[in-house]
Length: 259
Image 1 (cartoon, rainbow, N blue to C red):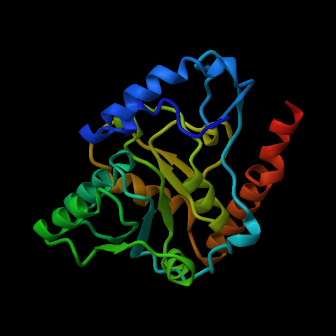
Image 2 (image 1 turned 90 degrees about the vertical axis):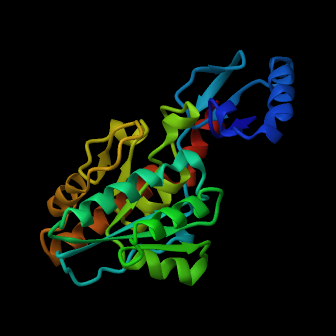
């Protein structure tokens, strides 16, 4: 049995979900009679009394093209966040940090592209409108295929979940970060993951709390990676290769087959 996110009880935080949560809590205590192993992207050794097979999320690289290298304009930095926009994605932290940066007359032109159409969309849209931040924060709704690729290709840094602590999750191997890496994009996240085990310079950890994201830290991260167009080309290729070597289906499924 696969349990993709654990613990997951706080993901259902609406009143209408409460009966299902109670039902789940009752019957999952019986699972160990029927299930031999749990496949999970967490670092738990047992879940519901069942031994775990811990794997990482992965992607099919044949379906994801790496980003096209655009000409550097280091005065402008494009950030991207793609998700179902649930409350645990925490992109309000990034929006608020960016608003503060621009209102403090930051010297760089930092643009944010948010793709997705979930529960938080209306909240983000209202915040951007109230703060008159529409000139540097773009909310696209859901995009797929070529339209999504267009957004990716103009972006420099991608953001994984920034609010997993809100749902009680402190370790998570997210699918979205693997898609970002397959694109060749550096990743910013607040949750512990398998990326912490690698000696890589294209993963930035930020605090796991509700404080707004400090944009100067993001700028410093960008400047370290992309000194010029040659560095950009090399870094995108390096990230893509890293993704292919570590987060392909063959690598991930091998652990399940061996078990």
